[in-house]
Length: 111
Length: 114
View 1 (cartoon, rainbow over the protein chains, first blue to last red):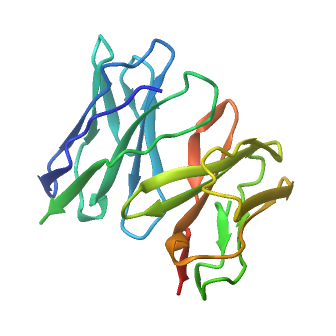
View 2 (view 1 turned 45 degrees about the vertical axis):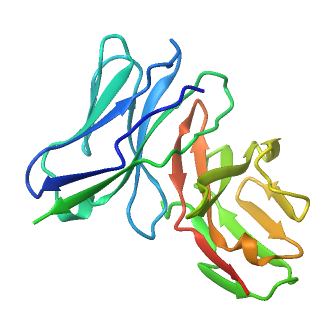
């Protein structure tokens, strides 16, 4: 499975958009980009995933570059409850069902 | 749906004791995953099942760890004998193929081995 690179931490003002980047330069053609987050003391929570088209759901938007080597998770109006560790994961190539969680990005939303 | 249910939520035991963690996946999900999370190693997959059959147990640290899934609605992770280095938060997750990578996690069991 392809590896991902994320900044270790980011800050965002409450009410503003949070843009979390992820590099996955070795992604293969049939691998998806997944985003999960983990709020302190809770289990990870699925956010969104995509293959090559941009995706949007009630939680976030996912922008994938045309060459698929990087992506950005966008939380349009961050709230204090969005403070969490955000994981970008590439998965789906070998039918293994495995998710490899890296260190993620700790997003701190500030009032 | 109640989501993935794990019990107990907290477990404190002494070294050498047997520990059993329990998980009830979301009804209808055919994949079940056990993860362990520590500060040092982060979140790591231990084992996963598909249709109650273990598919990949390569993440199980050693023979002291075992996992079973006797039916579609129940799974256990057992540690015997437990050691202080097993202290961690253990998460269970479930998913439904073909969306198996969209996993739903339980609240976790925080295990402390003294």
